[in-house]
Amino acid sequence: MPYDGLVAAAVDRLGRNVVVCLNTGYKMRDEKKMLVTYGHEGAWDLDDSADENRFTMEAWGAQMELRAIQRRNRDATVRTRAAGRP
Image 1 (tube, rainbow, N blue to C red):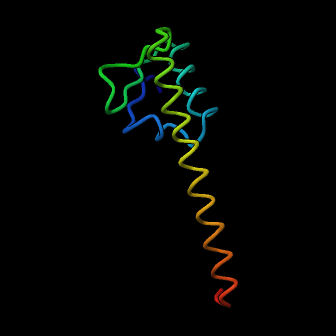
Image 2: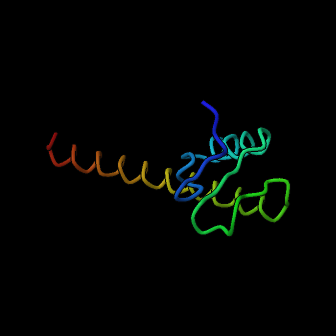
């Protein structure tokens, strides 16, 4: 089904790590599709170095957030098991 682009609440909603976010962003760019996220003025232009750098930084933030969540979950599992709870 044809579409004009992709809209997301934020770059970190496009993927949970840098690779997925960048692949999605560059796919939109290469296919001449629009990519829009909240908090960014207008559509992303990944041919523009400022937009590309900001997009990459926001994607990196998504990956850092995911790693922090994973670490908290692992730590909670260790504590729960140490306390004898399933």
